[in-house]
Image (cartoon, rainbow over all chains, first blue to last red; front, side):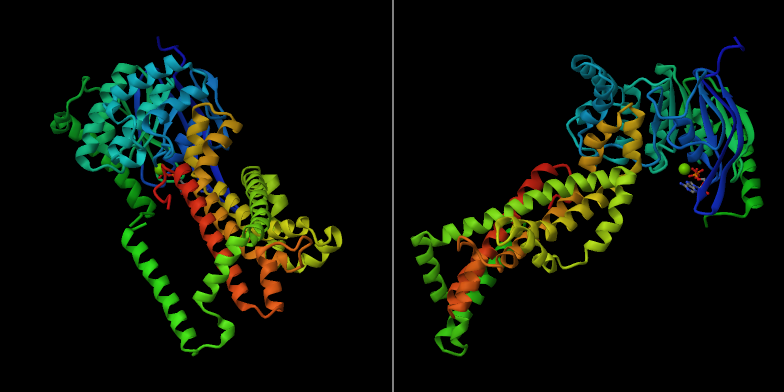
Amino acid sequence: MSTQTPAIDIEKLRKVYTRGKEEVTAIQEISLQIPEGKFVSIVGPSGCGKSTFLHIVGGFIPKSTGTVRIRGKEVDKPGPDRGMMFQESALFPWKNVYDNVAWGLEVQGVEKAKRDEIVEHYLKLVHLWDFRNNLPSELSGGMKQRISLARVLAFNPDVLLMDEPFGALDAQTREKMQVELQRIWQESNKSVMFVTHDIDEAVFLSDIVVVFSGRPAVIKEIIEIDFARPRQLDVHKTQEFMDIRNHIWDLLHQEHSKSGEDEF
Amino acid sequence: MDKRLHKIALIEVVVLLVLWQLLAMLQWIPEYLSSPAVIGKELLAMVMSGDLFSNAAASLYRSLLGFLLVAVVGIVLGIAAGYFKPIGVFFTPIVDVLNPVPKIALLPILMVWFGISDTTRVLLIFLTAFFPCFIATQDGVHGVKQVYVWAAQNMGASRIQILWKIILPAALPKIFDGLRVSLGLTFVMLFSSEMIGSSNGLGLGFMILTADMAGRTDLMFVSIFVIALLGFLFDRILLAVRARLLWWSENRG
Ligand SMILES: Nc1ncnc2c1ncn2[C@@H]1O[C@H](COP(=O)(O)OP(=O)(O)O)[C@@H](O)[C@H]1O
Ligand SMILES: [Mg+2]
């Protein structure tokens, strides 16, 4: 089984932004293989290149060098095989909840009856079917993110890319969303690449946590996490959980004191 | 808008009219400033004779034709310039140079080419009102959030689908801001464009000129009043269309 093609295969990826004459190296060099069906989190200090990394995997921005393969196929532009949830809400404010989810299917030529069935399924999955006629602006932050998730799941990507999807939510809503995401992911069998700066969130959700260094990003450490699924919130209280979390905290903390490039 | 604000606006207008009438009756203001009563009487006479209607129709035809041209050409070119980089690069210097030029300065050239005609008048209105619409539309396209376009690309949308279904609705609030400025300008230009005289003797702006030459300031006020009324009316119509199209937007006006 170990010879199976990885769901995500990144080789010597490098990204240098050029702004006029100035060059900013966002990603030094990253290689990473993720097997099929895994939940992978990326943690790292803010500004280290996490969004850049995800945007390249999504095909939204060009890489400088290296290769990105999804299920063995090299990618260089966006496509429905990778579903992206952006850091800021990307719901179309001029479409209601239903049409936001349905539009991607329409674009792909899915016929009306089938479309209705899929939209209903995913809106019920995120418990927001009753809000199908509302505008995104009428929903709370947590609801918006659930709609975004439903919208991405509806076009059935192989890989989910999520850029700090719960970053703007309060602690309680965030925990609820984590539990819900775990449930939905377990039903879907998709691979997930999840960016967060919240260590607890990463450890709770992931099979694998990838720790990025400060900018320019390299991988500091890859940590496997094997708590049984489905995980309950009280896993947070176990000694093992705290040990892992403290270990990651130390990794990031070294980073902070080394780079001296904090937000504060 | 708030009902109370409507009331205040109405009271304000009535108070001003009454004050004007009083001052005229007491002869505290010179006769050439006329009075609401005299103006009202002339207005009524012109309505009855049908003169007002034919003059207003002639002017409205020119203004609205100019506005329609502005809306179509301004939005199409603005979107093209905003979405396709080479087209934007092509238009930038032209727009930057021509935008601050008072278009009325081009009147002599237009008259050489098209004479004293509606073509000259409509073109003058078009040239004046085009730039706010074009610039607002281009800005609107540039201002569309990158993530909307990315999300659409993610779903597999084509460039054309993105243009029609994402860029256009997302830029629409800005486009309407531009259209509103343009509409106002077409009514401002209504007078200037008829300064060149009128071949058929009709037009609200032309009416002001002939009234002025005859020393009939009361007729001049009638014309100004009607221009203002029409400008207000069409602005309201535009706002209503905007509210319908932008029902989803928080600032639909
Ligand atoms: N379009 C861009 N042009 C130039 N530099 C950029 C651009 N986008 C991001 N950067 C820089 O790249 C670095 C990484 O940014 P980002 O990937 O957004 O970090 P993170 O998501 O980890 O907070 C930052 O220093 C940021 O300033
Ligand atoms: Mg980021």
